[in-house]
Image (cartoon, rainbow, N blue to C red; front, side):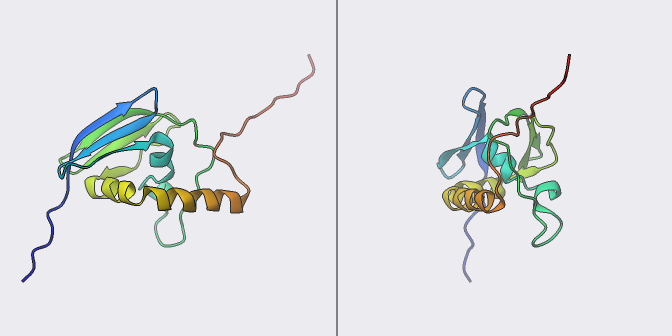
Length: 132
């Protein structure tokens, strides 16, 4: 019989507002930072991921997004509330660890999908034209 490795939990969370980065410390000693933009783009919510394979919604224009609140959910997850109104994703400790472990690959894939769709990371700028 083989023993599976123990589940890694989060033992430290700190949101650095000026850098817009969530600093994460795991129980196995790993420390990492994820930007608010990255966390928003990869939200585990159904609004972003959909309800099944191929239903995910590409998130564009999120480069300026910030986290306004970090709410604990039991001893297994955290709810992040973003300044663009998004608040429905629950980030489990295992999901955060997966994001950290695959950050480089996920980010590269995301940038490629944005380019393919002709979209960008910067929020849309709306210019209003009117006659006084």
